Amino acid sequence: MSLIMSQTSGLRLLLMGAPAAFLLMVMSPFSQVYAQEEVYTAELKPVNQQVSETAPVGRAEFRLEDDALTITVTASNLKPDTMYLQHLHGFMNGDDAACATPEHDLNNDGIIDIKEAEQVSGMDMIPITDNPVGLEIITDTYPVSSSEGVIQYSRTVSMSELKNSVKNRYGVDDLDLEDMVFMLHGVSPDMALPDSVKSAHGLPPQATLPIACGEIQER
Ligand SMILES: [Cu+2]
Image 1 (cartoon, helix red, strand yellow):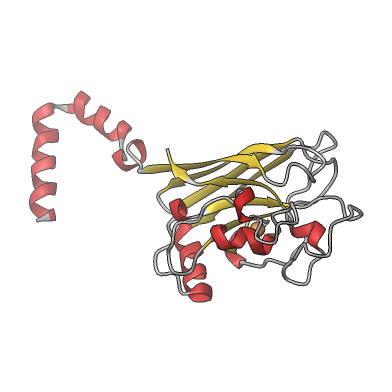
Image 2 (cartoon, protein in one colour; image 1 turned 120 degrees about the vertical axis):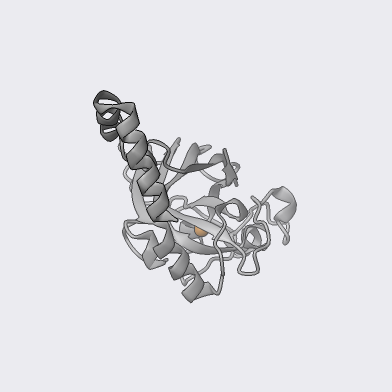
């Protein structure tokens, strides 16, 4: 089959003559021109705005070109010079994750803590750090806000490596970004929170408190 096709295209080149053949060669490879690109975005909306110092807003974008997944996060209205935990949350059983709303404040303490949010958002599967594929949740390579309180993060990872990593760790067969949400966490370490506010990974509740969330959708 491929032999026939190469013979045919060779014949076409001859028939078109040298200038056309040259043009065809210059334009190759066509795969680059028509590379498959999928773009997913999450518009970040504030969570727990009544306790977080500001109302963080922003956007996470996931651009998949062949196997290269470029993750870009821009968020503002944050505290200056502060490291913020950020993850892709989802469910191991493939359920569609959503962002928590005040109705998910199950203990009615006025705050949606990480445990309450995870009821609808799922667990923190993928940390958006220097190395998302490593799936290391406890790390100091989360992004740090600028002196203006802005996070600008961008990394490119291998989608197949990320999928393999998530499959090996969580048993998720075919990771689908559209089933996940992007979540940003953290308020000042010295902020007083009620004892009813739960945390995770042995971290103080101030570090894991959800402050912004966005559902990931294909554009
Ligand atoms: Cu998280």
